[in-house]
Image 1 (cartoon, rainbow, N blue to C red):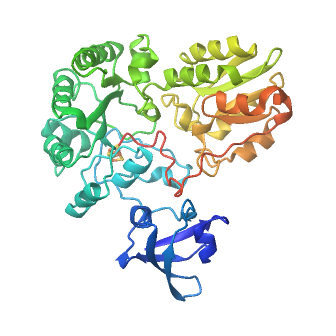
Image 2 (cartoon, protein in one colour; image 1 turned 90 degrees about the vertical axis):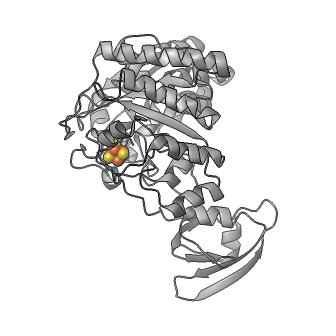
Image 3 (cartoon, rainbow, N blue to C red; image 1 turned 180 degrees about the vertical axis):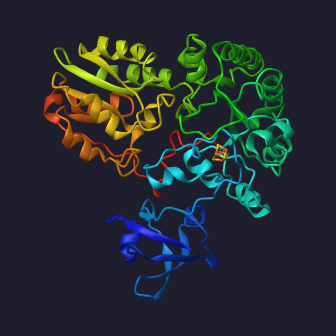
Length: 453
Ligand code: SF4
């Protein structure tokens, strides 16, 4: 059963009289299980919709949708498929107390994989799910492979029931489903020859595997790990060498590198990032793969619309991971605008210093970093650090943060989004807490950085 959370006024849902709390029961006689059913079954122009209004009254609508009129219904967040694995490196298991409740949910949900690009392991699929993935053409999916050797993969996932991933992906590939994949690299387990084997096996599945990223395992101060450790610099370099070998082959044979290392892998190896063209359409940037080059590309694309910021001093808040990489980005935007961009690298006081991604920065740590700053005209905060309700991981809302510091704040994904909006009147903009683009169903996890799937 699915339920309406809100209804846009200029929409079909509004015209029908659907209101928050309405239960959506069936379309054309088919019971609605979740948002996928809702989206796919209401795509037709003609449909029979059965609902139960909050009053308890059951109504059936015979709908002929006027062309271009959206349904305009936002659903309550779906019940999330829980993960049945027990990875030693699971970020969720290592969360400290006091975070937003959804951060304690270990999701392994192919529906969120399709909708939001969350990585899933596909270890919990029932035959019904497999049929559904094919029937609804849920492609591409984002899949955590880690290792193609079944024994090693089961060890990493700590799930003796995990199916053999190569035949599983092969079956889906035969049905027209494609994948972006990732390998979370654990030294001494799936690196070295096992990494070569995994990359070779995935490559052997053909074009259905659209990309593979190699991501160094990240552990927090609170991780309950006892079996894994982080990579050394030399191990990162060896992994990048394997990635390069595979990418060189793919480039020669398929015209694209296909296999890419996470930005963090380059950072830990102390090696320069590849150029933007290496990352194609940046499909895995949310996974920290090509994120720096993506930012630079976005700034370059907006160059004609960026304002003159001469004489302005702008703080750019980020986590330690991007700290050493961000100067590349800031040099571009400073050269274009004439503004003085100053990096404010914030240590993660909640998870501990080993968690360096900007997406997990707590509001309290940002407050501490900015509280005495009166010299800045405004500051840009990483928009990926808040959820759809504009709340940081430690339950501090962006509004609360803005009220506590003296510097005007702007949430920004890529600099260009804020700077081009404000134009020359940047000093008048004040608080600019932009919401994310609202999707029909709010991502219950705001998945950035939550687990390594
Ligand atoms: S890392 Fe991902 S797959 Fe592993 S236990 Fe955590 S949520 Fe599950």
